[in-house]
Each structure stands twice: as structure tokens, then as C-alpha cells.
Image (cartoon, rainbow, N blue to C red; front, side, top):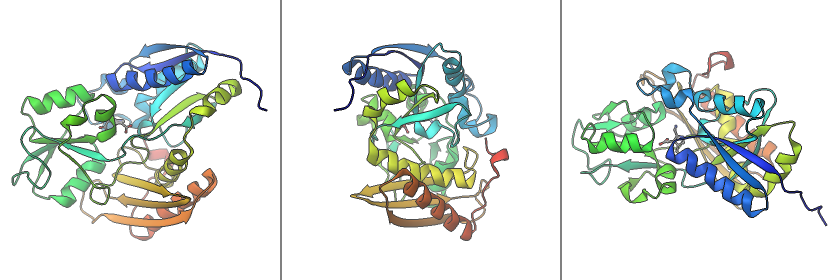
Length: 314
Ligand SMILES: NCc1[nH]cc(CCC(=O)O)c1CC(=O)O
């Protein structure tokens, strides 16, 4: 019999957007149900403050994560709940991903007050997104569209759409569904058309790596099929030196023990054609998942994709 875990007193560092709070409260409820006492520490990150520029121009993914890590470092908080998509491929020294939780819908969503789908948009319509991946994939589907930058949390983005600044916007289905705004989704993109970002829709919990007690307490929250899948996706990103200044998509589907992994790479200027790669393998360990991701990254490079060196990746 496994030893009964003693209840811990846990503080969750969280951003204060509605989505971040939903995610932190979700983990809070799961940990409370297991007997731990859990409080939230809300904080604002650089990524939340800088709203006028594209994230790829101001330093990338780490922007939503760093302040939370400082709180963990200083002991003001003990765990941080992240959208895995926003978590850099390599965590700083001293931090670890304690677990990955069950994934929400990983697909991208089409939202528009007037049009039912991408196909229904008139010639030259204005579509809002700041993600380079979405921009490149959308442009491949509909070269006539005008893609305009769109930043801010979910409520801000929907407000800008409703004010008429765009004909449609594209964002992650997961965020809308978690906030019970799934009815705003007019169409969900098939991954074959709009390949999702590595980790999209999955949550990861970060801890200081010296807190084995917390890692043990979080273990029951892990969802192994999701963890295996996103490990392969993130390995593609890592091997390509991926950051949000690189249009890169990686999406896995696990059926039994067979992991099918698809990836796409585009150059930032959109001048070269998209490079796509896919492969499948039997995957039952994180190391096997990682290896599949590395193999796909090699296929992308063989197909003409150019990776960034880790030093230049934001
Ligand atoms: N980059 C912001 C971000 N980080 C995670 C999500 C959505 C939820 C998720 O992927 O878990 C979003 C919003 C979006 O891409 O529309």
C-alpha cells in the first residue's frame, strides 16, 4: 500500500486574466478535494501589460511565465499553472514541470458575428490574429485575406471583434470552452487545415525542482495520454529552436499506444512554401514521445525548414 500523503499548504501563483484564474481555480479545486489547503496569489506579468505590440517582437513566450517563477523562487508561492503553449521548451535551472493535465480541445476556432466559416468570408476580409502560426496557415488557405494584429486576453479580443475592427478572429477553442463561451465558436478548424500549436489546450504545473513533496502531491493530477502527446509536440519546438517568432505547428493524436504526430513550419516572411512532416510510432514513455518529436523536426529540416539556434529563440 502506498503511504498516505500528508496534506500540504499550497499557494498557486497565477496571472489575473479570466482564463488564467479559471485554470488556477480548477487546480485549486482538485488539490482541495485531495485534502490540501490551497490559496491563490494573483499577479500581472509583462505579457499581460504589453498589449500594443506583437509578442514575437517583445521577447516571446517567457513573458507570461517569468514573474510567476520569481514568486516560486522567493517562496511567496509554490506552484504555477500554465497554458503549456506559453511555457518555454526549456525551463530555467531549478524549475520542473511537475505534471501535465488532461487536454481541452486543442483546435483553433473561427469566431465571427457575420460569417459561419473561413470559406464564407468575402474576398479580402479582415481576420485578426497575432500568432505567426495562424497567420501563415490562414494565408495558405486564403491568400486573399487581410490578417491584422490582435492582442489582449480573450474578453479584449472578442470585444475588438464585436466593435467591428475585424470580420473574424481565430483563437484557441480551449480558452473559449473553459470560459463557457464555446457558443461564440462558428467553426472549428480541422487540424489538417489549421495545425494547432505545440501544447495548445493542455495545462502544465510548474514547481521548484527541489520540492519533491509538491511533485508527489501533484502526481495524481497528471493525464498520461496528454503528457505523452504534448511531450512529442514540444520536442519538435525545442529541436527547431521554436519561439513565437517562428511559425511552427505540432499536433499529436494518441490512439492506444500509437502516437501520430504532424508538424508544419513556415518562414516568417511567408515567401517559402510551408514545410510539413508527419510520422507515427508506438509511444508508452516520455522518452519515446520526445524521440518521435525529434524525428519530425529532422524531417522538417530535411524538407527545407530552418531552425533557430537556442540563443536566438525568444
Ligand atoms: N497565447 C495565449 C494563449 N495561451 C493559451 C491560450 C488558449 C488556451 C490553451 O491553449 O490552453 C491562449 C489564447 C489563444 O491562443 O487563443
